[in-house]
Image 1 (cartoon, rainbow, N blue to C red):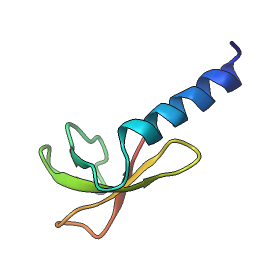
Image 2: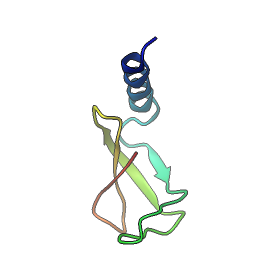
Image 3: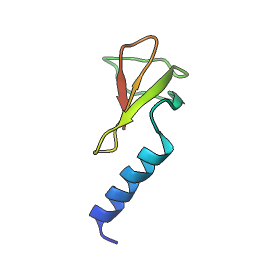
Image 4: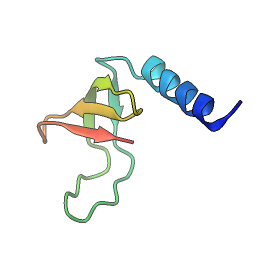
Length: 66
């Protein structure tokens, strides 16, 4: 299995494990310019073709996780 196949499989798994409507909790964030406290909850909107998880949360209008 080459790296392209591994990445494609990782993205397929993310889409399977995080369907729209799934509730998620932020464990950690290391962005000093947009701090979000640990424990912030959100709802998955979709997983894009790069594997980023887009979500909405009550505190912010939207976010994405890698």
